[in-house]
Length: 356
Image 1 (tube, rainbow, N blue to C red):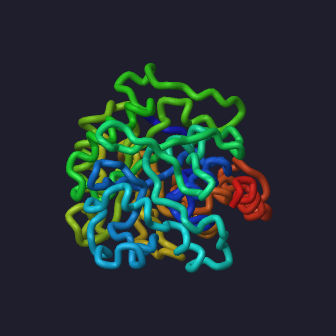
Image 2: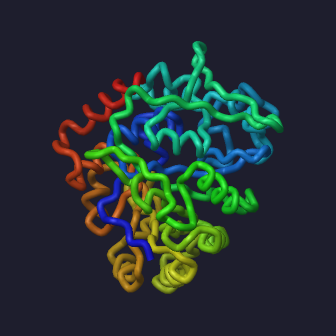
């Protein structure tokens, strides 16, 4: 069993606070600010590209209503990747968060899994004079993304914390994930065969066998991930209270323990419960009663998602890692950065250093 170190800063969607979530701006920022992991949600296009996107719908985080007004209710799997590239995934943030808006967020694209991995390795998307990303054609008309060294890269090398999102809509996505990660050198059945990235004195998770963590809410997907990935790859079983087959149906200790037993049986070494408190006000699945239950099992705790100091004070001491939208503050909480009063200034400076 792979036991991760404690005090992990998991940059939730890169950040949802400082930049449009799961875009190049959010992921480059999270890398440079010093997060241990870049967290992303995985879905799949009609032509087989693995993309970083949280919602089932494109309405909240893109301008699909302007570009494809007749397709706003279509699933992600109905779109070609080339069609998704026509969407603006940044302007919505400027409208929703005018106090944190930046001109260069306009026109940001939906990312590929490959984009996030290249950002973790210190690169950025290669773009033409018009700001559009450059790609080359491969036999079979598949487009190959192009990257270049990021001049603003400060040497941090975070790992990747990837979720199979709504996997029942994407049959076989676990096998696709194995193939993609193997192709990019981020997974091998033998951990000694992994490509190493040497950057002394910086975040170096990408230079360890724990460079990859997998997560899911789906019981079926957890079983499949456990079957297709070697046991050294940590797996997190996410918990949510709701009314789908994969949700904990109620807040009883019996239900909670049933889910934990399932997770452990099928390879989970981490549990990811939702935490209470604003701004999201999720169901609180990390109460003292829940923590007592978790301690009966060989599970680390990665709670989601942290937005405030109040949440860190309430839940942080019981978490081995935090899914955080404010990585700059969680770094201070864990003693990996100094001065709570200046964390916001560091966050803004990191964006400026990246050209945003």
